[in-house]
Image (cartoon, rainbow, N blue to C red):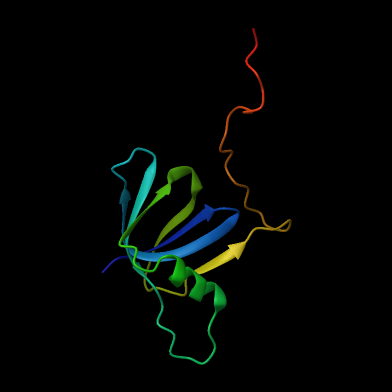
Length: 109
């Protein structure tokens, strides 16, 4: 069975999730991610980032991610822990510009 690791930007954070199915979405400009995989924690140490990710996607069968938010999609041999990472000054990831004009600017006459 194929497993994919999807890394994407969401609200200034980098999300890393694992899924069994990734395809171009029916909605233009979106990547469709189905059958999310979450690592089952059998240890005493619980990663709060992984737990927050599980809570955020609880009950989600399919999610649509804007194509400009996707950083990378990898096919991997086995799943790992999903996580949410904050972007900071030392990060080498730059969000793709989301607007092409300034909304406060009035059109030239």
